[in-house]
Length: 224
Ligand SMILES: [Zn+2]
Image 1: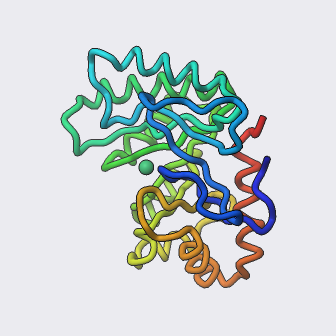
Image 2: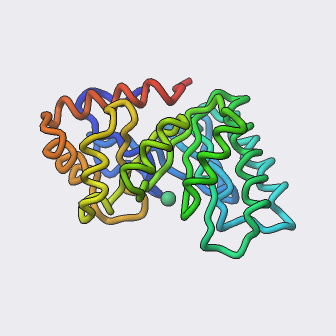
């Protein structure tokens, strides 16, 4: 079921919803147990760049492919590119590309972990023109980078850093409404705090912000 009008959408968290008024896309890693088809929660699942190990990454991608058949899985991820880890970027790109293809085949979105790799993601989109909705989670770049990513087709999701960063506040205030998602990820801050800040920054009511992000969910997630 799509989020209801009164619900706060949390597009990326490593937990289930903590109240009735929260709608969460709960992340599972590729090695985790996958949900049963009749569970009420919705999930993203993918092979995180931190978990890529030469020996079993193919096996884990197969698990992701299998999980993508589950009607409760709405997105592949988190997957992505992280230039602060040892894993070679070539291998990360290969694993990322394979998972984007799974998302395309299944009509799913992609939740993207990006560390110092916004330029590589822009390049990836130019070359591959992904048909999947591509959501960068925990966006932490400048307004210029945000513009370049959006031009390349990406959506941006903002997490707890938004609460303390003037740079991110500026970005979330000025980018088009249809590109914005909010998330708690692993933070102990609630999704409500983020909604409150964004509604103040954009000078719209909480209700309007819920409608706005609810519409974005309908654009990118195919709830089956
Ligand atoms: Zn996460």
